[in-house]
Image (tube, rainbow over all chains, first blue to last red; front, side):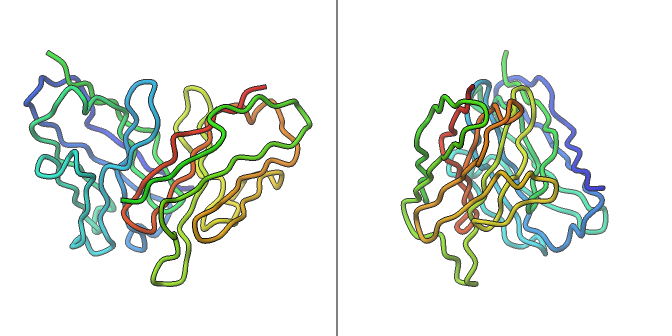
Length: 112
Length: 110
């Protein structure tokens, strides 16, 4: 059975940092591009970033460029999102997704 | 950036009747590898999204066959042959041909 389990979400002050993790199991992690997608409260889905299979190709939505870094560990079957200089508008549920597989999400709240 | 536009944004439906959602992309979704990376996702109230259809017309494992996807290039459609109560939720189209982007979502309500 496929599992994508996100962790690391919490309440953080504006300007702060968080590192999200996503543990994958039940599918061949190394075959897939992996994505972070977020959903602000009451809003639609927004693609945030993705990384190719070997971890060298990384792409971001303009609003997070220079602040977020996506990475993966193909030995640990894990995906990460380092988020720095957080803003109120980064408040959202962050989902890890690969191919047709999605996690349950982790909540990030940026507030003073 | 590829902009995805869904219509309608809200769709009142009757149980047992068909429903259809359209999605148009601002440029062709045909990838250089020949595939078209257009998916349809369902998000039930209080739940994470789940993939129903991938690469335009492929039904994901466990998805009822009343859901079908079609289209090519820039125009795509999700059809539900007979709406059931459990189909209530928001439906999104998503492209992964160039980075990633989603439609605004279509709220399906009985």
